[in-house]
Length: 144
Image (tube, rainbow, N blue to C red; front, side):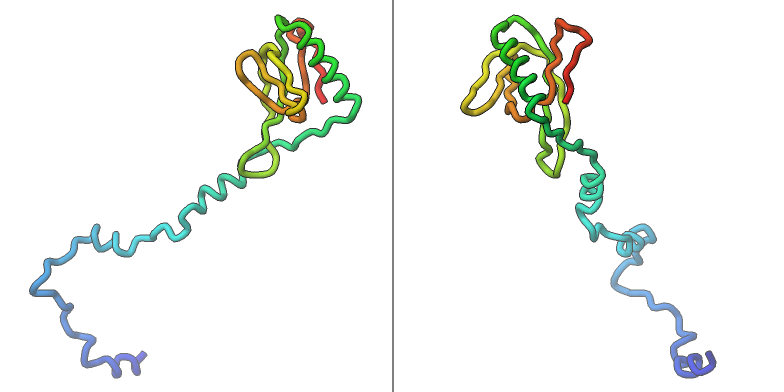
């Protein structure tokens, strides 16, 4: 430590410099100069997105698809019949998705596009249909 004092002895006891042309900066402004900045812009959003839960898609076997086909055929033949449709909605940003249940009447089925249109305007691919719960049967639900 003595070597450092000897080396800088000529400037150690000098008074602190104060500018004659510029006013002294207050503590708040001076602290703001050295405050941390957002070096990782978007990092928080990325972490939140990766933590967001998405459900796995359930794959139906042939028997389950036939049951759904029969239920859908019945609903097409009885347009006044309401039912609850559980549909898988793929996530736009990452693997997986969410299951939504919509209660409505079947308006039409397009066999070429394999799309079901409900009377409320909702359209979904037949391949995303997971279950049909007939509202008239109140407790019976076929979930696959």
